[in-house]
Image 1: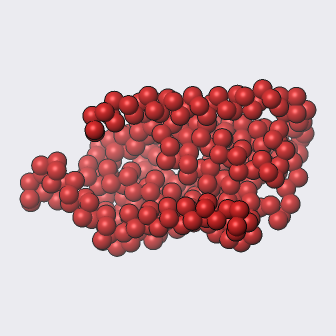
Image 2: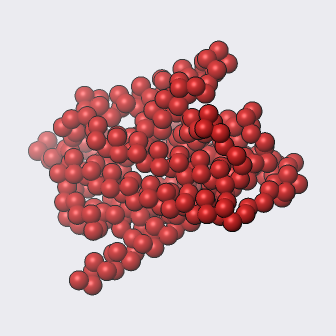
Image 3: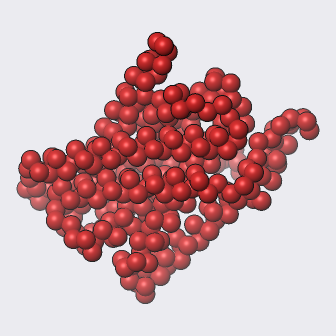
Length: 309
């Protein structure tokens, strides 16, 4: 069964990506006139520039949080190499396979004298904490006024269930036995050190909450650049963004391409014109990729500057 799943997984990834991109292309085809009618003035460009800056700040912040995770495993963390590594490897998530950014970080930690086991756990723990943070933001925003309890009870229940599973998965009493089991399955000697959590990762979880709030703010600003957003709609946008973002994280497409956009459209189309949503998700993807590319460039500059001194 495992062999069959391994052989089907690459095709499933491309099937999901193809299906979501087909949905997006069809949506643009059906509404291209409305999309073309949207204009971006000077004030909108200024708002988009702020959205870009906040998105870039979010990625820098995420690099710091990854450093906290490494510190919790007593690894040699120096932010002059942790931040450049995180920012430089971020763009690798768009390579098919969706694992190369993690591979680059593991390689960098071991190359800096860290443990392979701790590095591997850190890149596994980070997306789990991000998913928990996204579900926390979505649930909080939903319960503060967006979701209609009767119409969306199933969605609310699924979010609570997913959040509970993720929060339990990173608890030391659950995660540490799993790490020990994996170590035994890999045939490590009894005396080999197995890195474990000494306590619940509250600080990294709070850090990832900050990351999601920054990313959600960037999305909100991108929306504001194209249409008027009332304060009463802020929670709606934060909740929809968080749900779309976490699905883009867990569904196997490169960088969540297509999945995020499709989910955001489905969640927001009852509240905003479809042409506006299509334009926003396209612009937000552009802003996100640009921030990641600039972040990688900044990381490379810091790296070369550090090596020259």
